[in-house]
Amino acid sequence: MKNSPMTITEKILAAHVGEKTVSPGELIEVRIDLALANDITAPLAIQAFSEIGVQKVFNKNRVVLVPDHFTPAKDIPSAEQCKILREFAKAQRLSHFFEIGQCGIEHVLLPEKGLVLPGELVIGADSHTCTYGGMGAFSTGVGSTDLGAAMATGKLWLKVPESLKFIFYGKINPWVSGKDFILHTIGDIGVDGARYQAMEFCGETIRKLPMSGRFTMANMAIEAGGKNGIMEPDEITLEFIKTRAIRPYKIYRSDRDAHYAEVKEYDVSKIHPLVALPHIPSNVRDVREVGKVEIDQVVIGSCTNGHLDDLRVAGRILKGKKVASSLRLIILPATQEIYRQALKEGLIEIFILAGAAVSTPTCGPCLGGHMGVLAEGERALATTNRNFRGRMGHAGSEVYLSGPAVAAASAIKGRICHPEEVMKKGGKGSRIPGVK
Image 1 (cartoon, rainbow, N blue to C red):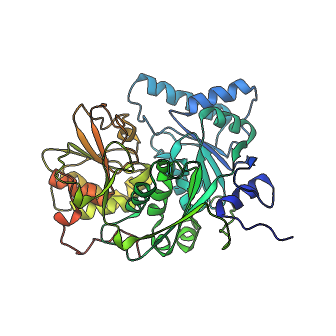
Image 2 (image 1 turned 135 degrees about the vertical axis):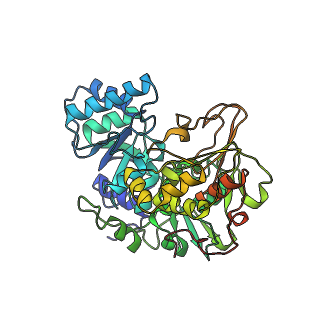
Image 3 (image 1 turned 120 degrees about the horizontal axis):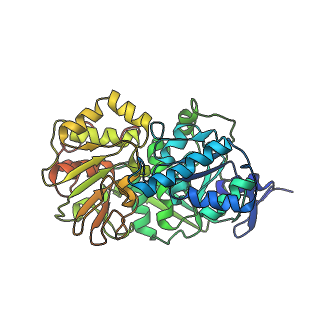
């Protein structure tokens, strides 16, 4: 009997439950390949783990702890949080605990280290765990209690999501990146438009995107309510993991006749650099339609746009220019390796000469933690993934979201602007690195 056609998400879930097929709505207990937590969520997961009464995690090579949100520790409570992780990692002899100096933003660090691979099932006590769908894994965020149970058992209950397909085609405009594609998508379907559904991104445009752009799109699936975001692996994926993979993996692809709850198509030649206005990621406008919005701070970084490609874009725009005296520009490379490579390429010097502050890898200001918290009445433009009220500081502040090109150009002008206002229209460097 022929198996029912399935999407990539359904195939990965079926493989991890030991069945030939699974169907949307079905409740299943899956085997997990990796469990992740950070300095905010791990202490609660560790407490839940301890209450179960088991002595050891299911696999010391498959539980990863990354203190990245409030580190380097900003105060005594955050130092105490990190201490809990450190002591648990030591007691359990975890292979993958990334302390300051080796640390980075978790969702950029894990792919960089080869700890996440295509076809795997990854859970994390962080909503943006869906990032790893950019390399063809099923990854999703869970609560700390669920993670604690998974650390003990190596298993998790979940419901098979319906799948939505998003097809991107057409010529990519200058200064447009994966951040603009996902903002456009969220602007179209809304912040609950993919609630508990798999967002599958495909089409000729996706096949041209570098891994950084793919990770960015999968990362923000949660901002549309998605259970996961995912893309089929291709040559670009395989090139990325060729020197990184630390274990065997399997490639899955959707069947041509797989069922989707809905299919949407986007002509990217109609998508220009975008900005999400406060206080919701779906409040999206073409940057040229935003108007004169003066800003007090620009942040370039986060698990969404702290990749080397993002820093290269910022460097092209900021080279030989100065940050407006009316604002603060904060740049956060997502990992130590990205920081090192940016230093090697001269990007860090460009940023400092322009008047930016460059930080050690941390989530920091993205969640209003530290290294760039906003005061009442202040406005920030950030390459982060959320702009909820009070997200980056005071409830009376405002956060606007964009890609790195708009962010860097706006830092020079002192107001939100199109990169063409500071760079020659269609000139050299207007293409995003890695985009074919």
